[in-house]
Amino acid sequence: MSVRVRDLLKLPTLSRSHIAAGEAGLDRIVSTVSVIDFTATSVAQRELYQPENSANEQLLLTSIEQDNYDLVTDCTKIEQLAKTGCVGVVIYYVGERVPSLPAEIKETADRLNFLMIFAQETQKNMTYSAVISEIMFAIFQDRMRHPSFAPTIIGRVSAMPEYRRSVGEVLKLLAEQIQASLAVIDDQGEIVYRENWPKEAVVNWESLLNVVEKINMNGELPVTTSDGMKITHWRLPNSEETVLFVGRQTVTNLTCERVAETLQTALNLWGGQNQDDQNLIRAIIQGQIVRAAKLGRQYRFEPKNTQAALIVSCPNDVNKAKLKKWVDQLTEQYTDQLISDWYNDQLIVLLEKTPSYQNWQNWETDFKKDDHQLAAQCVVVEAALVDGVGGIQRLYQLVSQYLPAARTILPYRLFFNQADLEFARGCQRELQEEGTEVIRWQKRLDSMQHNLVETLMAFLLDTPQNIEQAGDLLYVHRNTIKYRLNKISNRFGFVPGVMPESFELYQALGVHRLLRGNDDPGELGE
Image 1 (tube, rainbow, N blue to C red):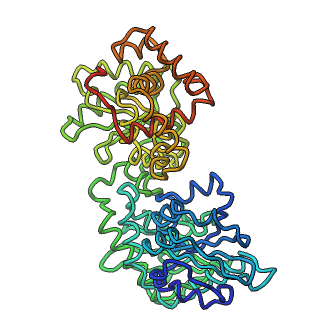
Image 2 (tube, rainbow, N blue to C red):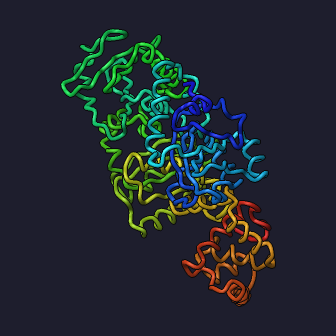
Image 3 (cartoon, one colour):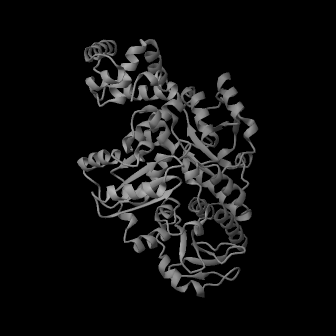
């Protein structure tokens, strides 16, 4: 890929453009384009432009009314978008006079090489779809002319969090890159990885496997199916594994070579199937969906029927065999359909049936009774709403990314659930975004007496709004807790713990813990 911003500025829909800031980023590569309305940012847009979700090398389009562009020129927004890998923003405006940027906005954008481009609307009936089509066509043409994309894709996956670095992730980017469905076939003639493009496309991989040996290999003309799909079969370099291309357009030999090289590199880095090829959990999390289905049949456990899960995190020196045996025996009391295995020093247990709330409570009680004292070294995440393979992957990502934050916010907990992790996720993002409401709440907490903040955290975060338990935790009488909570109610104008009034307070306390931890953890007891 080599389409740079300066190349796109030559397109008709981006003519008469004025670079207002970030000019040093003109040679940054653009791989996709999207639209965002800064004046009415929705929850979905906020979710999209988080570092783990947003597309790298992305150019954003937006529009403003003349002399009403203050909402798109915000330093915090610029820094957040730059952090996600966005290249810059093209702002369409109406009028003859080019809008100007405040000095601090320009300095921020210049420092981050984040392009801010004002592009005058040349046609009154011009639509975003026309602009996007023109940009994406230029990118597509470039990809067909210069399919040397292996370093870019391997680099993008290498920069992802560890739990996302996988062959499946590489295959997903490759399918999007060449706009074709892909499957990796092993030396036994079985599909190991597959990715449909577009996502909703229906590809009958099983029927293709039945005729795969008849499909020409490496350089011959592709086979065309009755519905017009073109199929190309290509061998990976120095390997018995092959890759199958399925799409509406014929894939060039050069593109096939580049895809094969990229996949071979990915397999060398993140394949590792021979290390533990019977680990069903590993196959699911790494995106080896076909292998997971095969192992599921072997173990008589259907991954897509998974409804609940347990993830047990423990120190590296724990006796893993003993812990797994203990957890399996304990969990089998509440369900007869489970599978468990180790993945990256975490014991993951999948259940086809969600235990009742009382069963979860009983499981926790029994887990704490472990005779080998294994439980005291572990932290457990209980998930009651997993919903299949995608849910398992999302849960693992959630645990990998936000369990440390959850443990900081809720330091006296050994058992967590999905809601705890989602809460930690929200607190961490609020802290990263540093919005005005977060700053306002932190100022309120900083201005309060230390013992009042301590009481709020004990009452709302560390106990189930239980005055007796909060008093025990802080070594004070229950009447002292009542007095302090009454004082806080008068200060804030609502009773702490009553929803929805207390939602922002909960989050503010979570952010407070992330910022400062436990002020005096030694004094709060166990």
